[in-house]
Length: 386
Image (cartoon, rainbow, N blue to C red; front, side):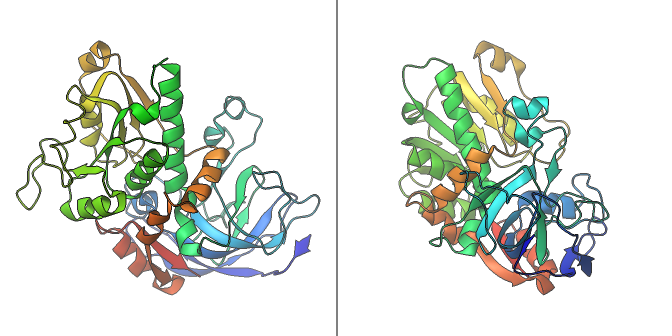
């Protein structure tokens, strides 16, 4: 075993009951097995799915250590050959890394089909029971064990911890969305590429904003982002510069504005009067799912990615799906190459503006304050440090 630090215990913030404050605990650090890493956490950001779990909006084994958007440095490596990063290089003690939200076996039918994020023996970081062999796997702790089958990506020194930490969920999922859309556009045999498509993104949170910046980076110019909250629209308009940002069709905001966009034509229909070539639902709001289908034009592609907690009673018009020959895709989590793309995007001019969206930073001793702030509509990625 290669070691720079060998702690016996780690401080952690533990969710004991849904809706209850997280509790400070000392958690035993397990001995590493072959292929495992022990990582000292530098930063962990609070994702929307962490909030769903903390507030009981989706089932989850308890007690648990939340947190799956994590940056840290390798403190120790298990016995035998050191694991390799996604790019194929051996990992070393002291490296600053981020890693995928899940570890996959690589051999089951789903992994072989290119769905490692849906592995039949999946381990999800920040989602395991504390009293299990994978208990020290959430980022709201001093240390995390990283297991074999995890996509690990070293971080460039040009990215600060706060800038890099959303990569392993929100930004990588955005990369998966855009990859999926490009595949569908190609599969449709269209005479034009994604850059020539009309695209609507629903939701001005981190996922929607990251997806929009990826789309602009690949050349999409006819893009509108729909967001019901005026403050979020203003932030999106600043981030996306000349892209159109508007309230969703039929939504009247608190300022009395109807469907007019903040940056131009009404609801983007100036360039998509018959519906959009691509519609991406990134908000998770129940009403956005039927809206996404309604906005898709004939032969359109509709990607649903925001709904990560159970929803009841979502209705859509199946006749519209049939008559318009729509393709509806779900995207949840991502492949290893998407995490590589996420880190590269954050370190590029197109992705750099996303760095300003992370924060503020709280110490783990103030984690419940961080959770309360993260639940506010304008918060995107509140960060917790050990």
